[in-house]
Image 1 (cartoon, rainbow, N blue to C red):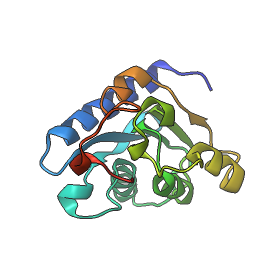
Image 2: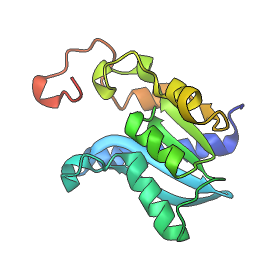
Image 3: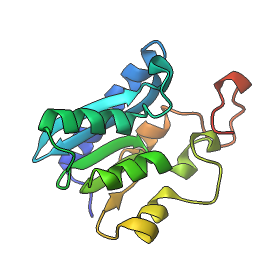
Image 4: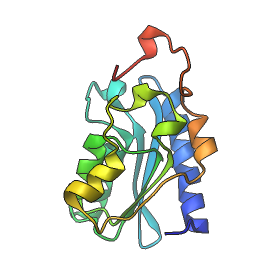
Length: 165
């Protein structure tokens, strides 16, 4: 599916949320926006450290807020915009919430390996191969801007900043 002006606008909002998250105490630079019928229904940034909740990834926070705002767990026609390719947990949450489309910025190859499970499994393949072949996934939207939020591939990351390794 080709990238639209709306995709760019919503990804820019996700980038702004990621920056907010990075500057917040206990926050991290991952942002997510969920849009339904042209309207933002949920958004957030990673709050894992702030909430002391390992499930408080940006996508999970945004899905929770969207479901609360809509009074429904069915987000079938919604699009999820994330600054980083969703991890396995967030991919599964998108499947269970019946998200209609996923758009992400930086992918696995654009950032340090610590942001992913460190395995050969690509969550995009996981979605299509294991669960849903009707969930379009568009990657690389504003990829350079999104990747700039994170440590680069091969970068020497201080031990105290490393996750998933």
